[in-house]
Length: 66
Length: 307
Picture 1 (cartoon, chains in turn cyan, green):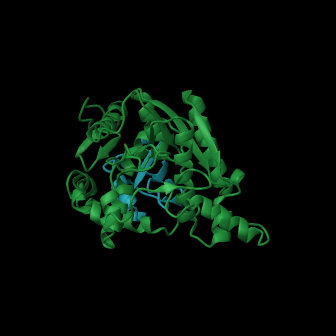
Picture 2 (cartoon, one colour; picture 1 turned 90 degrees about the horizontal axis):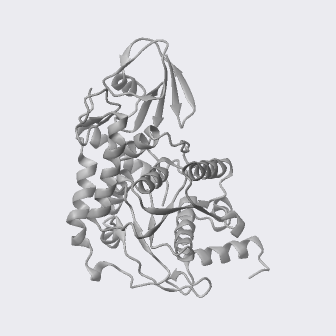
Picture 3 (cartoon, chains in turn red, orange; picture 1 turned 135 degrees about the horizontal axis):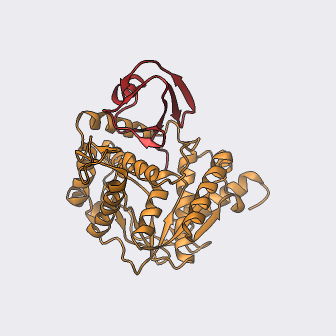
């Protein structure tokens, strides 16, 4: 599967079936700090992603504002 | 996992609330939370004209969308910071949103004032975020005064409030703790009430709302934000939240409900009401406001023979 990381604009290729929670752990992303999107749908931590999927991991944490 | 309301497939699971929602039920849930926060602090009424400070990011656009959907009379305010391609993308996102929703928008261009953030930071040697904060606060106050707005709304979310609270506590900033609240009454005739209706909604919750509403917000971070202390505090809080869901919400909500009052004593609040800037008429503490002092410093350093 191809995982697009935003806003880092990085693409990671992974193979094998895993839960969204496992995918985020693998990428070092804390729960609740990113949305996982597949085909314009938000995925829950318990759902699975697999080979052939195009997935976006979009971080939601912003900072630096006064 | 099923939606707690309609039992169809859920798209959002909120660990802090132990509740899952489908996209149809999530949007009204989110708006109800905003309405509750507004009511709990008597932030504004539907008779008020609300100026919504929008950056092009998820929080401010989600806030503007929600307030408009709830029937509030709103005008957007975008402050163009002059930060290259980032500012251009942000401005396009805000203008596209306003156009799509048919909502009025005011734009204040710092570059036109000679105060683009990179220029100010370079000439005054101040951190960009600090200069940006000073100039944005001034622009917000001035736009509110000039547009006859009753209230100024900003998109600060739960994570922003929790990070600020942690920072204030770590350094025992008593005066800052006393002033940290989701509604700030004006302290000067040129100011209006400032409100933070998203103060109890997390970044994930506002991002999910923006996504499910199809709002095209700017995902990129400001290039100056990397390494900001606020991000360190947010990460620490999110590590705690991962093992103990609901901690951030309890931390901030209970502070607003009770603990803040312990720090709100007038004797510890430091400064009195502001004076009036002799140059621009906005609030000031030392004859001139922070923005006019910055303007003078930039002019002096850019041309030592001027000023």
